[in-house]
Length: 116
Image (cartoon, rainbow, N blue to C red; front, side, top):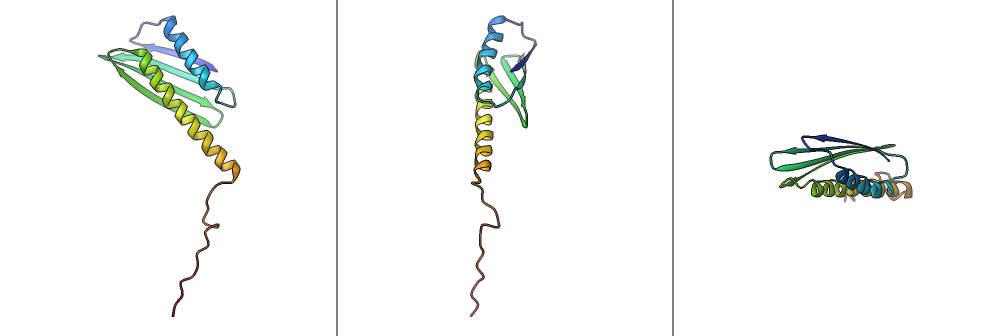
């Protein structure tokens, strides 16, 4: 996974970078192809904001999370959980579609009403 990290109003640190890489490498195992992630970390007043844009083949995910008291690690954890749920939802939709487990109008046979 290609990861680019941008810091806005936050001093860059190697500990935060390694935390992000560890979290995103777990998500990379869920994906089928090579992915790119743009991570933006910022601080505004008393809150830390983490935003991730993930692109992989047909899948494009954007997630954003905030944490109070300038706790950047909890913001990163929250946004990776949001991305994880979106990836599992996408994979579930894909699995259902490929399994042919979908309903269509053609399958539902409408019986004519009896008129007496």
